[in-house]
Length: 115
Image (cartoon, rainbow, N blue to C red; front, side):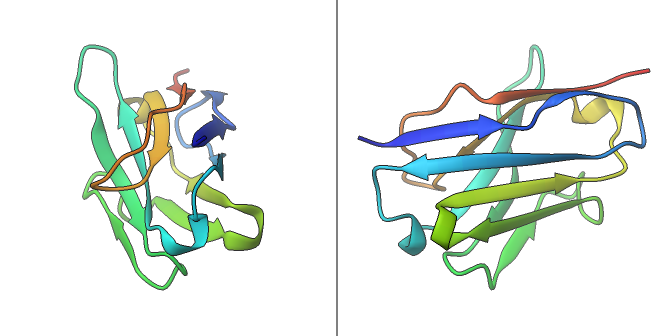
């Protein structure tokens, strides 16, 4: 069965950094593009970043370009999101999933950017 387990969130000050991880199982991870999403309180979930199956192609939302980096390790069935220069507007629950044809969502990991 498909499982997506996000980790690495926490409380960080503006300008700080966090590295999120998503451990995937139950499907052929190496053949799947993967994405990170986030959902702020009272707002709809939005796409943050995507990466191709071998990591050669990436795409980012305009709001995070130059600050976030998505990567993957297919040997570990894991996708990462390195977040630098964090802003209060980055606060939210972060999720990973396959784009377009999504699997059941994991619980996500909470990122809070505040002084």
